[in-house]
Length: 93
Image 1 (cartoon, one colour):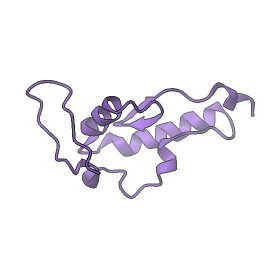
Image 2 (cartoon, one colour; image 1 turned 30 degrees about the vertical axis):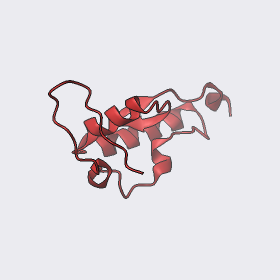
Image 3 (cartoon, one colour; image 1 turned 45 degrees about the horizontal axis):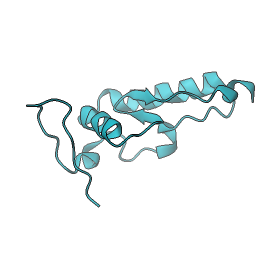
Image 4 (cartoon, helix red, strand yellow; image 1 turned 120 degrees about the vertical axis):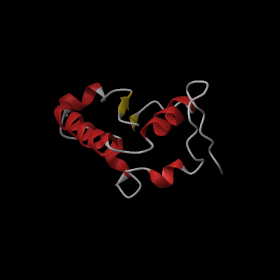
């Protein structure tokens, strides 16, 4: 299955269709980008910060975020942004 890049603005430079191959997170553990907060909200926020630091220098960060928004991703760190939030119950576990 090929997932096309949908630019956020007219005239925006198109990222290659294989933008994921160029992502800084390509070799990272995917669980890092979906903070669960098993030991509390602070733990989940720290995990999200670590994921965002991977995104910070990524050459396809904008394409990643655009793809996540265009495809309705509701949770996780995409393009350096945390979508959704850390579950409220995580602070009480």
